[in-house]
Image (cartoon, rainbow, N blue to C red):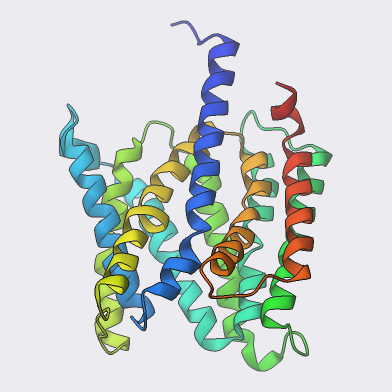
Length: 300
């Protein structure tokens, strides 16, 4: 069996990397659509949006030659997918319940840096100084943004240890899920539909056990929920799966710090937040970090 030419592999990697940028862009709309969805409780919103994203993915899978057979994956694949999608969200909501939002989000946004660092352990991957430098600049931009938006108060307090641990767990779970997807190249992206639906079922169970049901109020809020399910909690996960399996992990890790900035820009554009000097500084740091981490890609 002959291997693909290097130019073909490079083109595939470049395409997958740009699909990953698409996922990051969709995650930039997460805060806007969530704010527009009203007072729907977190686990209920997770169940609704993952059901939409998984259902749409399943409809697409059903049209393919192998159809629903794509969901017939080994238990370890299902464990990987469900632990990544549901595990991350469960830990994130736990973090927000038990720690201040600013500190929790700061710890959560260690995941792009961890993706860059963990990629070094994968076969065929090379971690270079400019990858780390780019990711650290992105982290610095996120620190500036979160500190200005939510205020880091007096710093991390021992009384919120559970929340901090959950937030750090978020970063670890998502980074591991993302990087280890590279070790499952034979698993089709269509299988993500099954992981989304399983996440919706588990989130529904958590909602029924922990929350009071609150339905969206009016067409605008329902549209926001639908938009979440189609984009940030739907298409983004399919794009990210392809990107992690074939794209440039270090570049994607550094570029992921654009998500909180894009979220803030979207909120400003929609009138939910005000433009600030901190936002401008964060943009400069994150764009610079992404360009530095993408040096090799830009040369090609």
